[in-house]
Image (cartoon, rainbow, N blue to C red; front, side, top):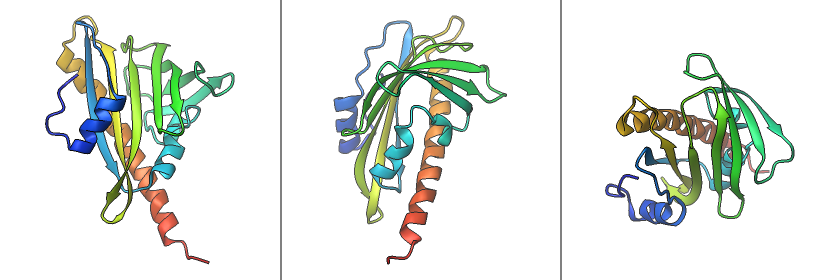
Length: 184
């Protein structure tokens, strides 16, 4: 995983506490940060929905969860056309509603993301005088044959950045609705 230079002390502490990966020689790993102008409970209400990632992940068209929503649950995700995949099978590894941490592992699908595991954690912060959310997402994945670690990290980081931007857009839109509703 890349170092924590360039991160704030809060970001470094969140990475240290929740985003430990030990990549093998054939794997790459990275950490991405997003600051969202919406409170943690609102953002978490979207992130925690293992059964509905399409609420904010723009590349997912459909999701079906097998069994109850609990650790070990599997979801079958259909990926929108235009990407080098059509399906992904993912397992819920961790869902902590108190600490706002979700972890998934990809266990199958018609793509090149082998041994992919990710952790997303949410942390309270104040942004422009209002409750905000620091989102930290990290991953580790095998480097596919014929690709470099840098190429693999770039592709995965690009997908995560799109997901985090969409999460921010959806969350901030909902937060604005909450802030503009009249107080009765």
